[in-house]
Length: 244
Image 1 (tube, rainbow, N blue to C red):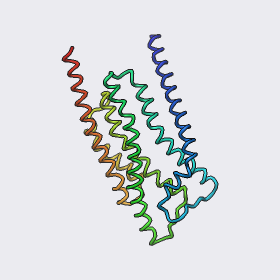
Image 2: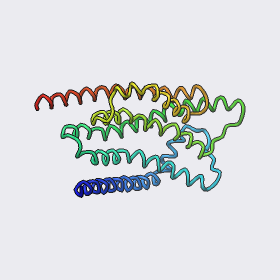
Image 3: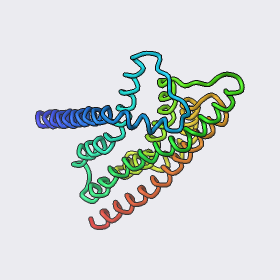
Image 4: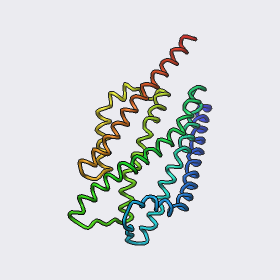
């Protein structure tokens, strides 16, 4: 009993250590992001024809920390993935350890791809649509806070959802979920994803469809990779049983 308790304590200590490492890396990347905020800011507003408005000094501070925070989150993805992998590594077979190690760069690459998809496809189309229909009624101006809130509310969710197939692949590989479960949960998942899509997008049908449909496609891709991982795991387990 005491050994078991010590084992639990050791696991908690290790988990705390890895969480601290993630927090330290996030703070470090946040500092780097704050240093390059001006460059990132000019890149994100390069398509606007006029300067953004700031309603007070707090808006300027908000811009710095929002841009720096998003930069830190993106750069921290590999660190978070590695710390998670290292934490569960003892429970994995040697071959699984090597295979799941490849998920770390995949998570980062897909996260960046999701941000790029949201920024270069979803955001400009939705912004142009709303600006066009609004220009007939009112004079459209942008405050910095509203502009970046709108931008990140569209882009960041796609960055995380692009990582979903890799996460599903990992969970399937270690036996936590199965493709049958994902298929059975498809209706419920569709309902949740559509709610998320309509929540992060402006309240119009075109924007809702532009954000919801890619999320549903990502879920279907997750089922495909889960099926592939499940078949490999079943084949591996069958080989082990035959050897025994």
